[in-house]
Length: 270
Image (cartoon, rainbow, N blue to C red; front, side, top):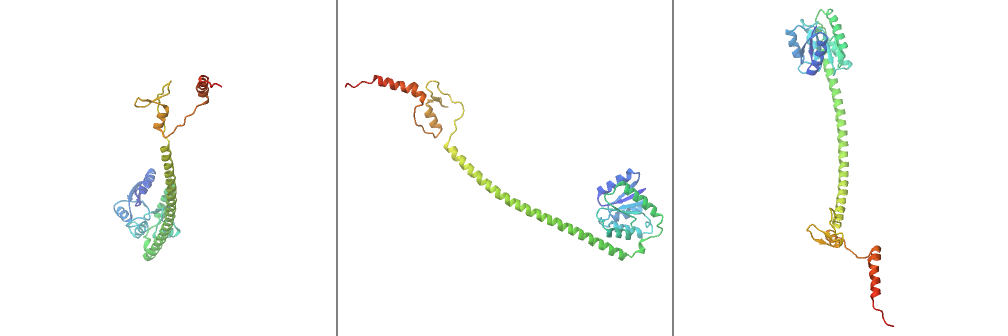
C-alpha cells in the first residue's frame, strides 16, 4: 500500500516510515493537514495515518475535510496520537469520521492490524459521511476537546510551577545554610591561621645538614664561619640558654677537676 504519514515532528514520521517500509509498504509524508491535502491532490494514497496536534490544520480537521470530499471521502483514516487520549478525544475522532484510533507508541503489529481493518471498512463507505454530521456540532465537540486539553496543560503547568517553587525554596534554604557554614569555616580557618602565624613567630625550624666539628662541637654556618652551638641556635631561633652540667660530664670532667683543685689547695696550719 501507498500510505500518507502526517505528523509535524520529523522523527515521528521517520520512525513510522521505517516501520511501514520494512513491511513492504511505500510512504508519503506531510507535516500538517494543509500539506496532506496538497499531497492527496497529486498522489494516489491508499490510507492516511495522522497525528492530531499539528500547526495550520490538525488531524481532526484533516479527517473532517477528507470525509466531506467527494473524491477522498472513502479514504481510510487512522489517528495516531500521544496527546489526545481521553474518551472525549476518541468520541470526537469517531464524529469526524476516523476509522481507527491508535495511541503512541504502538507496536508494529497493532499498526498493521489497524491498516488491514480500515482497508476492509473502505468498501463499505460509498458516500461522503461528514455532511450527515452538522459542522457546528463537530466544532462544538472540537472546542470542548481543546478546552479540556488546555485545562490539562494548565494543570500540568501549575504542578510544574509548584515543583519549581518548592525547588527554588529548597535551593534558597540550602544556600542560606551553606553561607552560614562557609562563614563558620572561614572564621575557624582565620583563627587557625592566626595561631599558626603566632607559632611560627615563636619557633624557627632548623633544617638541612649542619656541619659540626667532632672535637669542639662548633657549627659551620652558610658563610663558612665556625661558631658555637649556642650561638648558632640563638641566631636561628628565639631560644635562650641556661648552662648546667649533665651527670656524665660531672663524673668524667667536673668531679676530677674539683678533686684535683681540692688536692692542690694549700692547707691552713692549725
